[in-house]
Length: 353
Ligand code: NDP
Ligand code: ZN
Image (cartoon, rainbow, N blue to C red):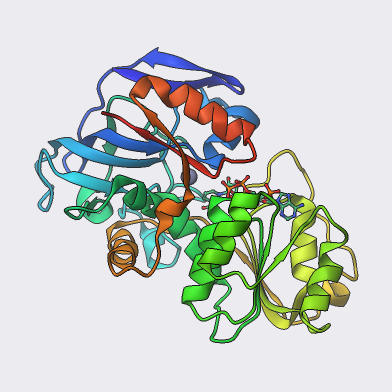
């Protein structure tokens, strides 16, 4: 079968691979929709590592099941499914005390295009199918459903990790697709003032639709000063980082009030050190602030819950889709677009007709 792979860092191409073998509790799917992600860009062009050689890219997909293992009870060939990008094995003792994303070792839950082949291929295998797959509800549009796989679960997780409470002032650093979902998640969790940082006009417009009350441009003056002004000098209750650089972490920490929460969702590559100035660190990390950060929670129940929020009309994540492609052969172009990030891009989708 055909798979779109990262041969070496920055060297991508189509490769002929054997059909995936379906284990007893696994399902093999053919993609019916795929989205490239900023994380694919990091994997393809920025991350080095022998384990990534010739790995199939992609982790956001809606699939149609073409084969199931004999132990799979709830899914059958022909079912259309939402495939979370985090698909833990559930067979490791870490599950008793570690988030599922990291059970078996950090990032092991997000195996697609990290530790095993991803979804940008004619077929891909999903482990622990009964525990990871979510049936695609009849009539739910693919451009909504596919956002459950990563953008919604990740962005919402930012708000969860910050423990947003009714009336909290929340700042979201970066309003690409992840940050926009963090804005939507923070609003749903009860944020009061909701400050979004970014500049792309369509992202700014959707941030406002999703609940941002104030927009700050990181290109126009000191963002920390702007945020402190907007919060009357008190600082925010919570800061979610979904863009920027290593420097952004220090900025986010510094604008959180004492006792508040800061969470990082951004994949930061190409740095060896992350530094916080003494002042940014609330006088030597003595401000009772919580620093957190995490990966997109996966698994079936999570996907079902997020899907139910779309069905109930709580959020329309298809607002993120700005570019549409058709056919497996358009994957390279869609991924390249994600790398180039033209001003009007938020998220491309590829329909595999
Ligand atoms: P985008 O590149 O689309 O968005 C980045 C955002 O950051 C843009 O709004 C951009 O503004 C803004 N930005 C850029 N520089 C700064 C700055 N100095 N200060 C504040 N904001 C800034 O990224 P995505 O939304 O697609 O992804 C965000 C990150 O999340 C990526 O690193 C991705 O890999 C990661 N990710 C993490 C996951 C997880 O599980 N933790 C899962 C999926 C993705 P502008 O409007 O000017 O472009
Ligand atoms: Zn992704």
